Image 1 (cartoon, rainbow, N blue to C red):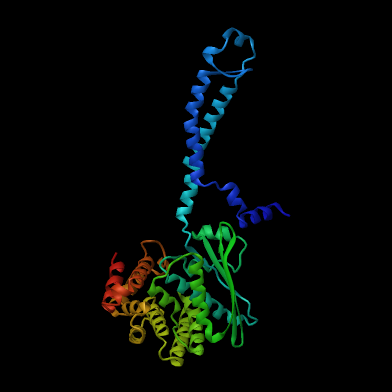
Image 2: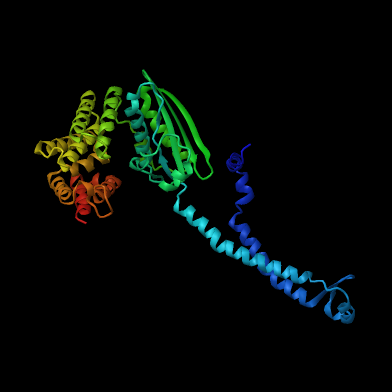
Length: 413
């Protein structure tokens, strides 16, 4: 057996943890025992003498005879060893365990990154469906406040099923990684996922789902719920409802929606070779999705954001673009008033906010997005997070105006 494989197996079976990872209370107990025992050892060394007949009081020992015998320095050795152990344990407790505790605190046990899923379908054109499934699972996990979920933008550069999971986890600042694969054939789909704790390289949970394609939503919801359970993250009642929410029951509409998301992401990640053409394709697919299901509120909301986005970046600076964004957002709100994205995109498609954002993009340049912490891109992301995060309080009750106020506040910083 290879030595690195042997130690990995020891860690997986928790042998390493039992043998080497001494709990803090045990270290404190040993230090306390040595600290208490050290002065006692000094007193005993001073008051008693070790003779061939045994341990005697110093006053009772014949000093002349003792001087002629070889001197036993056992007590001196004991004192030196005890002192060295005390100093060593003190330094270990002060610096070694503090560093380990700091690392554990920085990386939350409930932090997770969802790596790109592997496409096991024979048709490479199904890549949009694989990406969409991964993104929907990530989105549902992000709705759970007890979890720290890394964005898709940060994980896109990694491959499916990489070998260096621990290194990737450290780069992303997470303790757990979810990886998986999707295989689609005709009207069926197989989704295989596994949740890995990277520090110990152990599987916390794994499952394979074989479902009809029209039941893909239940798979995505179950995965998010099972991941939360494995990480012991408690869901609030409203979060349980959001995770289980089904945006459409029409398989054709959902397929068109995923294709639109695939092209839209190329625009948002600045990987589209022809942004104008890609935007037109994405918009057309969103419109086809709502044509197949006129009650598809999320598709209307994403269409609103796409239209507003291409207006901001002068891909389509026409008044018709921002008007189309506003109408799509209003339709999404009418269909699903509690949809946070609908409130947010409605506020961002208002003329005042859209014009302000477009002006700032012109002043700072597209290269500044999503730039540093002082860029317009960063303020926009903060605005999105603030408004979407408080959708039930700031946006739900007060409507579009409240969201516009939140966005305007962050844009003005």
